[in-house]
Amino acid sequence: MAELTVADIAVVIPTRERWDILDRTISSLSNQTVSGFETIVVVDGTDQNPPSLDVSRVLVKRRAGPSAARNAGAEATDRPVVLFLGDDTIPAPDLIERHVAVHRRRPEREAAAVGFVDWHSDVAHNRLNRGLGWSGT
Image (cartoon, rainbow, N blue to C red):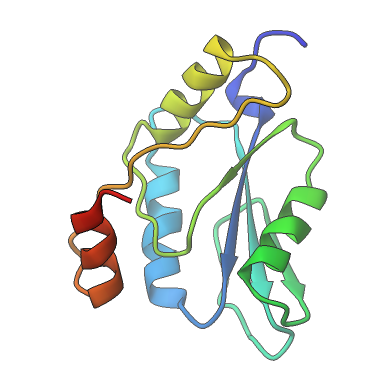
């Protein structure tokens, strides 16, 4: 495979009934230090009416949970690298740039990049997130 570029990245975001925080996630993606990646939002449930979203594609699938939504997003792209984000993940401005750098260092098809998530102040105030942060998970 040729050296990975930003255009080889698809960001897949599963969501359900969290339009306000999803808007923050999408806004943060639009402020990345690089551009040219694809963003796919997968709405988990045909009963959902997503607002207009500034992304490459919006898929609305029958309700089957976030894992099935992630899989649907991964299947919907032809880009070789998929970056999964939660709908409440507010990425740092250089997230995509750093993700590309990891894959350039590890170009194997089986390589995965997993990083530490530092909770954004707008989403860190629930018991689960505090516990995950405390435990270092």
